[in-house]
Length: 139
Image 1: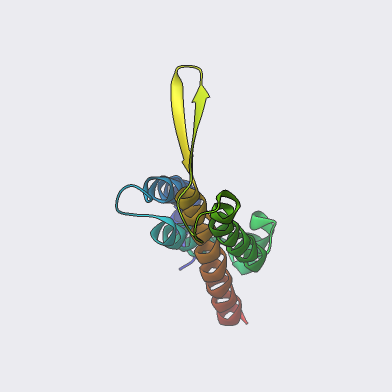
Image 2: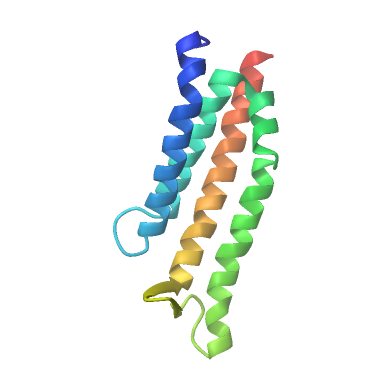
């Protein structure tokens, strides 16, 4: 699938998918969605970019190895669970922090941090698999 239309539209599709993936990830700790589905959507966008431009060009565009992204996600997810131990609560107990930014109150929580970690794990792992398959197909 290497048509001029696909190569032209791929960056636009990828941008839309990445914005939607972040939206799904951030709303997921209160409503349906979350890090897993958001990570799959984001990784799918990378797969589309890989089909349009090739795996090597996509890896250069990412600038970071996808498996490194997955490793960072595992660390974020683990640290979000460990944060509750500092308050004397059981492992993976939710902790909420409310930041006041002017007149707006922004709720931050360990479930959101966990979802972000899961997002990065799924994104990194599936992106690495998709790019690996794309490289194998080209060779």
